[in-house]
Image (cartoon, rainbow, N blue to C red):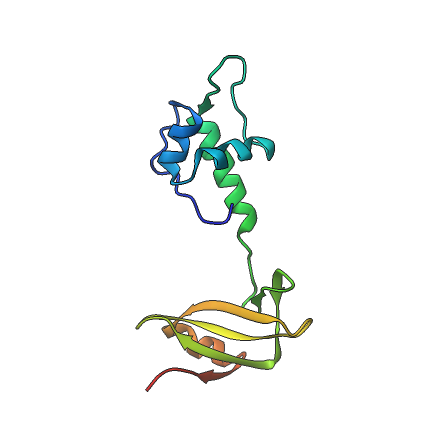
Length: 139
């Protein structure tokens, strides 16, 4: 599942066909069919196949929960290791995204790949005690 899918439009006591489920979730019917092979329960006793809304919500929530990574305060997410790691020499850059948020970027201690962590602008003081922060893109 490449993008986050919102289950807010899914009614848990309703039956969905592949096309209906895809339209409600903003994905293609083919994507919903592919989810069958990775654990989505589908009623296959009759044709057309139906998916119970509660099962669809459970499946998506379970898939998205696996992607969430919990990090300690001194860790950032490494794209190469695909795990939380500490930045090389404790040096990171702060790149503002908007007035209230930005992201810390650096190099991984283990593989020297790219690290990233989104933080609030107010949290820079807290992270400044852990990292040596260089602020980029602010005038």
